[in-house]
Every structure is written in structure tokens, then in C-alpha cells.
Image 1 (cartoon, chains in turn blue, yellow):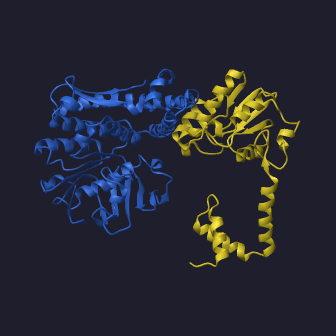
Image 2 (cartoon, helix red, strand yellow):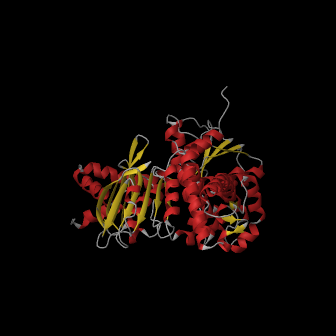
Image 3 (tube, rainbow over the protein chains, first blue to last red):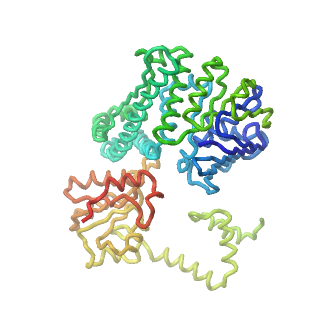
Length: 353
Length: 199
């Protein structure tokens, strides 16, 4: 799939913008602070239903009261339009002009993989950030996963509220544990299945790209199991512990995924370069997974790769991304190798040339 | 827009109704002012009569004008089969089908720790009490298939099963007359899990 047309109003430093894109490799260039990343942000907004770096109310252009993002997407021979409008009153999403109940009903319509220079630090920080990254990817590829995640979160919020009550709630907690175990097992099962595949893809990609010398391994560490009966038993046995701490201690919301190079945990022992390389492999693997397993080639957004890699490595990487996606957006401050791109967009002060 | 005091007051009251926003409230108020006076009066009286003459049945807690309610009093209904529902509107929905001949028990809500609603806020104690004196054999739990409805069903089952009642849950699945392609994925999976052999 690819973004055919992007239209944004009062978003960040753009007042009104309408730009048509071709499939293939697209270079977005311009000096710093002109709005390159804002454009990437707008496209990715329609992938995940929010900004990857700011709160909604901070995205409205100074002096305006609302922002809008709309895109025409080409998918095989099919065209769909997606849109979002945000104002102080709230936000709503549109698909083919029809108002949606929530973003979750259109999540997955525009599939995307994003890489930004700030991401490795965040990704290799708290476990919650890694879970979020994995969830955002899986939710795009599996509707059941997304729904399980939504229901799990609802049950979890209720269970935590129950654990915070001062009275003994053991007889009440089982009803919530039962549902928590059901959705939790589902989430763990899907994460394990997906990471096993991603792991194989990453190994193969690393063998070809030689990003990280040595043996790379991604593993999923769970505090539960993929068997709902067993999680239910576990939660039952650990009731006192959870009640003491006043929170749910076991299940997919406490899990983690770890990257190892030659058996050493990257988040502890990895250099900045290794972390960056590993995350790029992970992102590339996501594109491969989407193209091969879910059968829909994503849109890839690579912010500021030039500052990260030398020319040769960057070109190999872009080439690999293009193998598994229909459209790759690349931002840069300089117009280098223009003939390598299917389309070149120059940005200055919120205007496109 | 400016309205005379009595009209403004009417708009304000209408705006408090569920599902009515300020614009609809204004539209309704202006409509009520245009219709013949006797029609407006009839509406007002209908509201007052309904308020005055309905109460909750002391047995099943459904809305009723007699106590016990017509369903609880009806010897033609199967008093060994009891259905637990969330709200009076669920009784109405079930009665419209005409396919259930048992009796009801209305919980008036569902468990929701985030809203601070526990079993003591629902008609759970009342349910256990009536079960101890009525000849009920099977209890059908027909709370909504929402997260809260499911948890409430599980909770009730954990209370009732040790008392040797047959406890059942209404089936989940695809809405009749709809297309599979329009159903959400979890509904389809539930429907798949609940599949039956065709006889």
C-alpha cells in the first residue's frame, strides 16, 4: 500500500498542505526546523491514531483551534481515505468519509513502520516502551490481538481498582482474574508466535546486512504463560502478594522483550551503535512480516537516517526496506543522490515545493 | 439565542435527559410549545402517572405497576427457570421475543470496581434470599457480554454453583441476519468456539 495524497490543515508548522506522492522511494529534504519530521508525524498519526512524539493539543498550529490530517491510500487496486480531526472538543476519525466510533475500528488500514533517531534510547529504556512498540506493531497486523489488548486493559483497570480497596476482595477477584487469564493468554500466545517469526527474520537479515557482528537473538520474557488455566491458577495463588502491593503483578502487562548479541543483553551491554542497528533490524523485520505474513506491504518512514549511517549502509538499508514496502519516506537535510529517488520533496517553512 | 425564562427552564430540563444534547433539547422545547395544549398536557400527565404508579417488584426488581409484578405472579410461567439480567430494559427485550417462559431477576447494574460498584450495590443479596425460598433449579445469567457483564456472570456463577444450582450463560456469537464479514474478530472467534454439530 502507499499514500497517494496527504492533506493537512493547521498541523504543527503547516497551515494548509496538499501533496501527492508516488509509490517508491521518496526524499523529503529541507533545513532543520522546516517541517520534515512533522510531515512524517502526520502520516504516522494515521497509522497509530496519535502522534509518536507529542500530545494532541500541542500539535495544533499556533493561533488555530483544530488540526486535520487526511490521506488517500492506495491498496492493491482499492482506494481508501482516512482522516482525523482534533479540536478542544475532542477528536474523531473518518474512513471513506464516515465517522468512526474509535480509532481501533480503522487501525490497520494504513500499515506503517517508523524509525526515528531518538527511538533507540527510548526503546532500550523501560520495558513498557518495548511492550508498546511490539503492541503497536501486532495491533496493526491482528485485529484479534488489538481487541484482546483493549479488553485486557479494561479488566486490568477494574482488577487494580479492586486491589486498592481496603477490604478483602478474594471472593470478588476471581471473576476478574478469569477474564484476565483468558485475554492475557491470548496476548502472550500471539506475542510469542510473532516474536518467534521476527527472530528468524532478524537473524536472516543480519546475515545479509551484517549490521551486528555475532549471533543476534530476540526473546520474549513473560510473567505468565500462554495457558489460560495456568495463568488463572497462578493469579489465584498470588492473590495475597498482589493485594499487598495493591496491583496486578503477573501477565502480559509485566512482560518484556530482550535483544541479545552473542548472549549479551543489548539494553545493558550494547553500544549506541549496536542498539540502533538492532532496532533497525527489528523494524525491517516488521516490514518483512507485514509483507510476507499479513500480506500487506507497509509504508516505511525513516527520519534522518543520514545522520545515523554512512552512505553505503544507508543505501543498502533503504534498498531492503523497499523490497518489502511500496513506499519509503526518507528525510534529509541535503538533497543527495536525487536520481536515486522516485520523488523528491523540498520543504521550507511549512511549504512543499 | 435568548429565550424567555420558562422556555429556558424547559430546555434545561430536557437537556438533562440521556442522549439529549443542547440542540435537541432546544428543538424539543420549541416543538412542545407548538403542539396543541392538550397534547402537551397528556405528555406531562403520562410522565407523572408513570412515575406515580410504577415501582420495583419486591421479588424480581423489574419495573411494575403491581407488586409482585405480573411475571412473578403468573402461575403459567416456569418458576424453576430464572434469568438474571442487568436492567429492566433487558427484561423488556427478552419478553419481546416471547421465547422465554421463566422468571427474572434484575440486578440493576453490573460489578465495576472502577466506578466503585460492588455486589452490595446490586440486587445480589436479594437474589440469594429468593433462591432460598423459591423452587428455582436453573439460573440463566444473561448479563451483557461486556467486560463488566462477563465478570459479573463469573462472580454470580462462583456464588451459585456451590449451592448446587444449574448455572448457565447465554451464548455469544454472531447476530442473526448479519454477515460474518461485518462482525468483529473476537465475536467471530467466540462464535467459532461455541459451534454446534448440525443434527
